[in-house]
Image 1 (cartoon, one colour):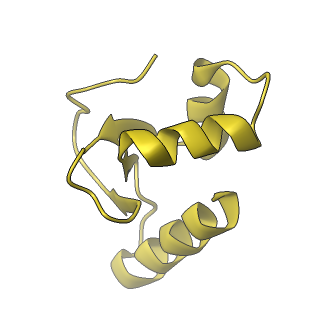
Image 2 (cartoon, rainbow, N blue to C red):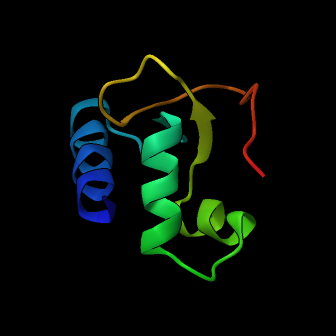
Length: 75
């Protein structure tokens, strides 16, 4: 999961010239990320990724974007 997030964030930055600040996950992706980073608090995961996390239930794959503000925070 982390390698996929890194790859899509890198591709976004190459395409747009700036890094993404929002990561879109569904609840299953979030659960998998929490397993990979077991024992790490959610605030630290967000800090580590450098992106806020938004939950999108219909999301088939994690994806990234850039927004002025994040509407839904995971905690």
